[in-house]
Length: 230
Image (tube, rainbow, N blue to C red; front, side, top):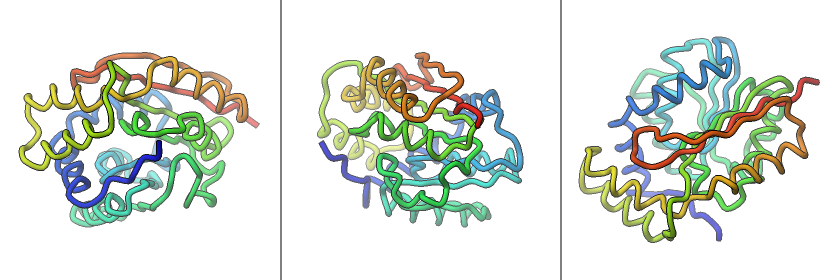
């Protein structure tokens, strides 16, 4: 099934949610620190949404070269506008994480390639992991955080969740809606197989997959791999 980009009012709703939940990014940033993020590096964020992670990282690491990429042109537009409002000169591009579209000049240029809460919507997990490994330079690392499947749910559920976002701010009641909206996410085995397939094409020196709850009331899977040094 082809995943359509998030557009219009849905994109605005995602931005509103992200900007109201900055505290939810702290754990992910701590993971990036553990992965070796440092000033002066190049970091590519696939499926960047409206750029909240870029705003946070640019404040903590002012010398990072940050490139955010998203399938939705509306999300890219919002991210650029949001960064400008925050006084940040950040780069955002339109591109497909599953096809390397719009990223050819970044091949083997990134020290770290990340994605946060997006891969559960993709139809080609292995292709997305392959993109991450092709963008990262030898010795660099990738880190993905996504939702796990907790039952059977379809795309209309996702749309219902977004409609809910359009009507009310981030609050405790959204935990249940968030959980329902992500019942269609991949299984843990899907992530393992996808990363293993990508690693068979671009060798890695280490990889780790683990599960926890990042505070949304939904299990999350974190996938880390370091590309083998040249």
